[in-house]
Structures are given as C-alpha cells and as structure tokens.
Length: 134
Image (cartoon, rainbow, N blue to C red; front, side, top):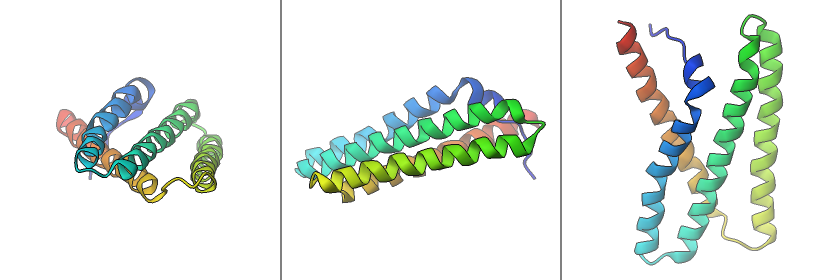
C-alpha cells in the first residue's frame, strides 16, 4: 500500500503541474489544426483552457483546505465549496458557448483531455514519491 504526503507538492509545486498539462495538451491542438480542422482545433483549445482553469480552481481549494489537516470536517467543507465553484465555472462556460453558437464538442474533449493528463501526471508523481520513501 502506497502511503506518502503530497502536501508539499500542492502547496508549492502546483504551478509546475499546470504548466506540464498545458505543454502536454497544446501539441495535440496544433496537430488538429495542422490536419485542417481549424474550427475543431479552436474549440479544443477552449476546452484545454477551461480544463486548466478547472484544475487551478481545484488546486486553490486544496491549498485553502491544507491548514485544516487536523480538522477534516472544516477541510471537507472548503473542498465542497470549491467543488461548486468548479461545477459552476465549467457549466457556465459551456452554456455561454452554446448560446454563442460555438462548437462545444471540442470544448468537452479538451476539458476531458486535461483531466486525463492530470490523472496520468499524478500517477507519475505518486510513483516517484513512493520510490523516494522506500
């Protein structure tokens, strides 16, 4: 069973994760653009930006909840509040794009792409932290 502390990572190095996510996803946007799907590439880029914004909100919530590590109920309340911020920002952005008649499928793909890259990134970080502790 892996047991390690990711607190320093979230309190100091979350900007590196955001930058890594952007660097991993933007070549895919350029590839779609080079393939000749300009409108879908623009939509995908909007989704990537929305996914990065969502990740920033999540990290902000984690940073706000860190002082309550010994009072889990307060930390949980903070994270629940930030969950609503994330849901509200993503849904408002998608509704706005639908209202403006923008292509939304690429936005959803970009949003999911960022979160898939985030999960992969966190798996590598957890593996590295586990190796350092053993």
